[in-house]
Length: 154
Length: 78
Image (cartoon, rainbow over all chains, first blue to last red; front, side, top):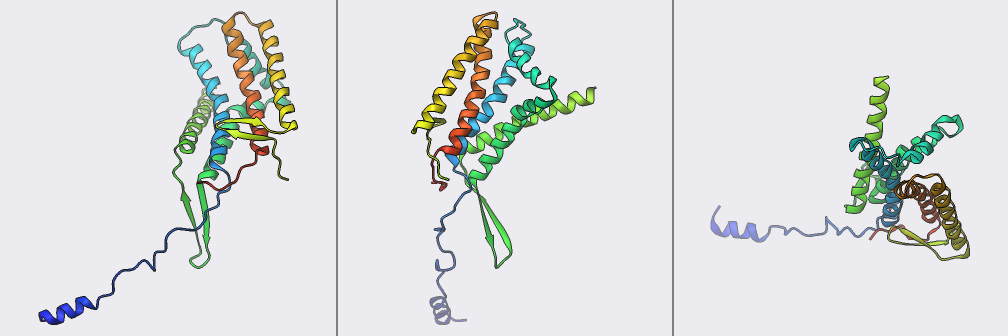
């Protein structure tokens, strides 16, 4: 291949264009609003977090000033009656799980591609929602691990 | 059904209609009742406050759930 032929070949090369990669201008509709979900997620996380903090203060620091007695009586009063037995797990496991679900749905986009028969899932990086998901997951894990350990012990 | 009883600002839901105001006032009145009830059974100020905060949080959760479903916000995330 001489120089002229090479220049001709290079001149006739097809330049890469943007026609195959159109900008992502599709409007992605989420199932839930992320800011509103973050707001409710904070409240759902606050209840078990407060309980954990109080129990931690009582048992870790070993200070028994009968400060959280009414609080503990209130929680255990639900467990005594079969009709209200579901309320305690609802507060400490149910609410964070709902918080995880709400926050996940608010940052995830689902798109079904008919041609290729696949579902495209994209996650928008919203720090507040992700922090709430991780926090809620941690709280749920702590309570579930506690339940497992407690049942194994007995 | 498109309800618009509350409007969200940050993590708080503020009432914007009569029903919203009724719910808010009812929650505040219930919190005051809870405070008086807990205070009558508690041993100290910290006892009152610790137990009251937990009960107030539960009221706030219920209030926020109502606010979440009755605040009008678009579902398009920017």
